[in-house]
Image 1 (tube, one colour):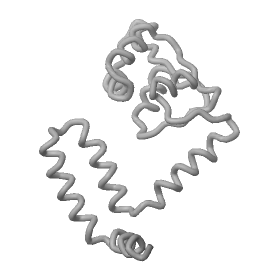
Image 2 (spheres, rainbow, N blue to C red; image 1 turned 120 degrees about the vertical axis):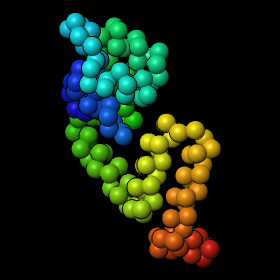
Image 3 (cartoon, rainbow, N blue to C red; image 1 turned 60 degrees about the vertical axis):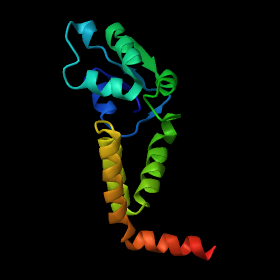
Image 4 (cartoon, rainbow, N blue to C red; image 1 turned 90 degrees about the vertical axis):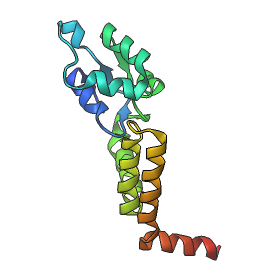
Length: 149
């Protein structure tokens, strides 16, 4: 985020798995200021991101937060200078893309499902996904490298 993410723009940003902001970013759940509700998912996404109490305060006050406060609240992962934003996002993307594709895909799915599953069911799913990954060449090669050390 390299500028204002306000109202629907803020909600859209909060739908992403990760957010990096430049020092120029501003964030706000400002719907109430306009006499309307956050009707595009903002009330759902924001409280899952930063907790009910903080989301409630931001939503009802309609105040803007700068990038530094957004990092403190947990809205963004990092804050960088504007000129570094694209490069830093690219670094993170490259790091994730270098992970074994199947394990990466299943891990992302687990992270999302964990938010709405009971622990026992979640652990069963983890065991199934782990079994799927054990037969992947990337896992077998990684184990060989580990034992070679």
